[in-house]
Length: 190
Length: 190
DNA sequence: GTTAGCATGTAAGGAGTTACATGATTTT
DNA sequence: AAAATCATGTAACTCCTTACATGCTAAC
Image 1 (spheres, rainbow over the protein chains, first blue to last red):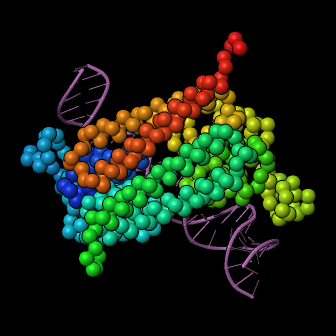
Image 2: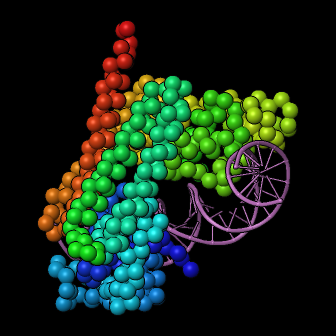
Image 3: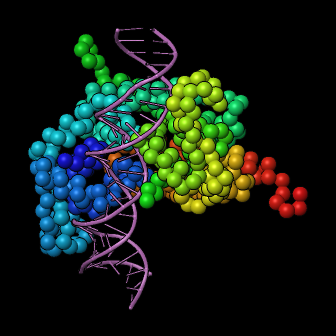
């Protein structure tokens, strides 16, 4: 049980990929990765860690007092380490460029680990995200065009602002895609 | 029971303020108001409507076939109408400029009904939202400054993009606030 | 000496979604 | 005659948060 929103799993696995960490530290880094909004709570994190241990993707080890591998000698921390299975799972999760990865949250999490993502998956995620944003753009433009005049000044400005935000995101994605294509010399006949 | 996130309540009450509507239509309009993301499902909407009826804020009336007040004669729709108590409740909800109203979602819902919101409340909501965004800005700048060099190209560009988005929102809010102050001639001695 | 931050957890509950169930009407 | 859209609802379940419980260490 516990579907546990693949993005949380991806974030934990991805962060532990760099180095073993304990829960508290993990949470702080996650807040940077997932953005200050959408910070995960301990009530979510610790059960999720427990579940990952049960599934054999990570191991837990109590760092009792001495010989802490991390500096600043606190005490009684439980350090989580990625297992080989966990690495495999992470590899599969980052390479998954399916529709779920175009979602706002999932896309953020994916980008945070683009450094460890195969180039083809990166490209497909970027392209998918962009077409998702273009759909959103079309929907917004339609409702803007449909509702002119019958809507008040405030609603109009809000919708306009939302629209421009999405346009800006599309441009940003296009830049990333261009750069991606540039650093990708040629697929077959280079 | 059922705390039912004031924003859903505000949205329903606000839309029914304009005209009586049935659930299906309500949901479509809500999608425009709350944005295409964050579209409410029927599994959420209908129980919420039932609860509002129980609380005496709206009344339900089955429009059986003939004499539909809305055009396009379908059948068996349940039309919800705002009561006097519902109007009062809406009045209090829109005028509530507390910290909850600076939240992403709540702020959107509030702005959608700014046309019916007293000027002082509008100003306080705008100001509160802006300072909320400025806090977010400070947090992002800190983590940008802290993590330079040790972070990869992708993460950097993502964080940069997020930062610019928040900066843009602050400018937009500042414009709204300026306009608001301009059209507000004088409080007492006009 | 008390506030703030470090550190780990659990139980209860909140706010929603998905999937299901049903059926009429309109469009293709 | 099939598919899409209109229309209303319920039960189960998901994912997450809040509040609680505990205790240690560092800074002010």
